[in-house]
Length: 213
Image (cartoon, rainbow, N blue to C red; front, side):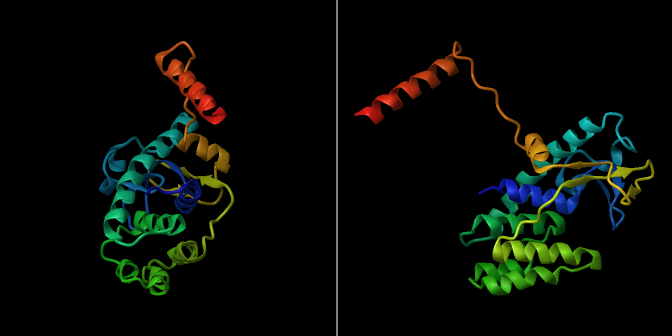
């Protein structure tokens, strides 16, 4: 099981995009869409400070690291949860774990595995520090419970060489389509003269024959 596109967009909105290394609310060096060294390389503390010269390239790198990080967090949720999940529930749990790293120890996971989804939903709010994170916990709870996905653009924030983020005004706002184009790049159609293209034509021909019989 993997996050849905709507889940990916919701998580990116919660995190925001900072295309340079910055210090989060705990002082941890972070990059891109909430990436820290705890998730694996690259180490934000060892990367060049400040905004990239090429903002588009910096945004693409943030999404590249985000995709790599997600694979780990999705796997953690699949291991921790022993009951079947709806896509909206999985999306909410990965968002929670991406932010807290607490899926294996959280009471919400114990409630969920015991079959008590009501208690699991309420237990999202056990993780409410700092106070500024409460709206996110409430959004994850509502996504888990009702499938309420947040909407709107995804902000890109600027950062200085000291790792301070300027949250007064985003330097760019990505639409859903722009973000998905980076997250899920379209694969080029195979040329009809390549082996892959010839195989695709054969499959189409056989499918047509089957439909006619």
